[in-house]
Length: 276
Image (cartoon, rainbow, N blue to C red; front, side, top):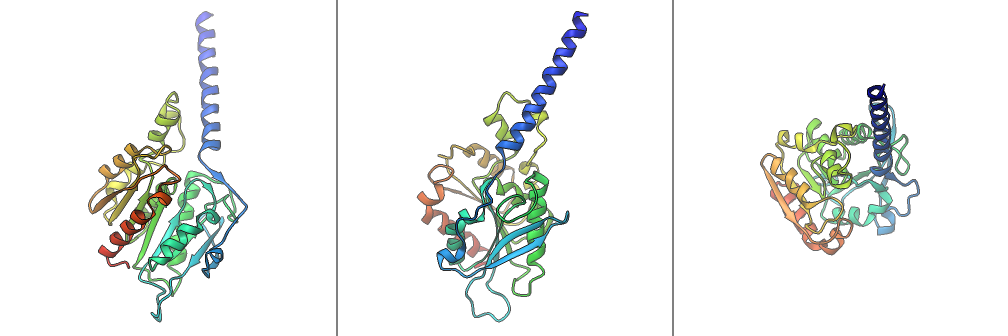
């Protein structure tokens, strides 16, 4: 009887731990906001408010800010798909959208499902579907060069960017302050949770080696949210061609404190591959 009781207690403890892990996953990964506080127009930029559907019939919202050019067909040499981090929505990234636009790029920033005006509920697979649908949508436009679509993924968005580059033909990949996998992040944030209990994988490190396009990794040693070590680990697992750009500042301040180095590094990278 004692053995049966012990087994029952262990099963109950396991169920409680699993429920706790699922609760952590649902509350600590995605932090969407519905209220959009700014648009590109606040930065003096005209934009298209775009809606498109994913493979699982979820309507996604994004902004397309087209570069100024005299070219009769394409709005610029390249279009950058902007996949943002886990908090807020596209309205919190207007400054960075304007900075990328100033480089001479079309910028297409989207909100994942559950964020901003996008329908649905956030999930790992859903985020991947949203990124794929963004690429598919751009390919339908006659004013976008289909052979020059680059992808920028910041933090959580890096996982979506890597997955997109695995499944669609993109010109290059820029990964900013992102991580190797959800399991590696969990070891840092909740080291007491056994990795096999996690349902969310975001396993970029096992995808990156198969991606042969040019890749730029950006990370700060001062990053207190996504450890620099995880960014370096992902870089080491990547195939060539690849480059690494060190910046300064914390996770949310690195772009602002290292703005010149950040933008100049991206500009040089894109120039090397004739994308701007």
